[in-house]
Length: 177
View 1 (cartoon, rainbow, N blue to C red):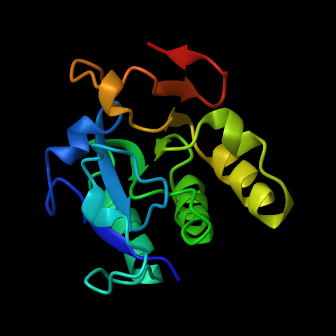
View 2 (cartoon, rainbow, N blue to C red):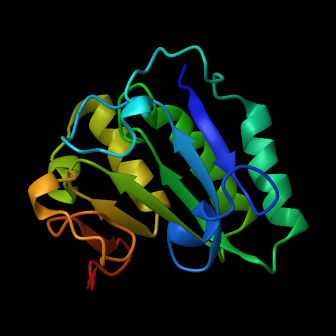
C-alpha cells in the first residue's frame, strides 16, 4: 500500500502548487517514497516509503480528486502527480488507479507526472513492473523526467529544477522547451 503526502487544490493544501506544477490550474497529488536520493532534492522529507505520519492511499483520496475537479471543472486544467517517486514499485499501482479514474471521468483534461528516472529508463522496464510503467505512461500526457542534479540547478526553468530534466509530451514524443 502506498502513501500520499498531500493533495493540493485551490481550497486545501498549497495553493501555489496548483499553478506551479504543469500548465494551468491543477489538482496536485504528492506521493511518498523515493529511493533515488538526488543530492539537493527539495522533497527529502518524502523519501521514506514507510513514514506513517502520512496516510495510506485510499479510494477516499481518489474521490477527493474527482469531486474537486467536478466541482470546479472549468478552473482545473488537469492533474499533476509528484513525489517522492510516482513510478516507484511501491507507488505505481495506486498511481495507475488514480490516473485511470481521472482519465475516465475527465478525458479532455491532461495528466502531468514527474519522475527522477529518465523516460528511456522507464521505457526499458520489463515484466509486471514494466507493464505497469508502460500503462502509466499511456495514461499520462506529459512527463518531467530525470534526476535533479544540484550542479545543473536552474531556477529559471519552468516546471523542473535542473538543466538535464526534460518535459516531454507523451502523446507526440515532442520535448517542450
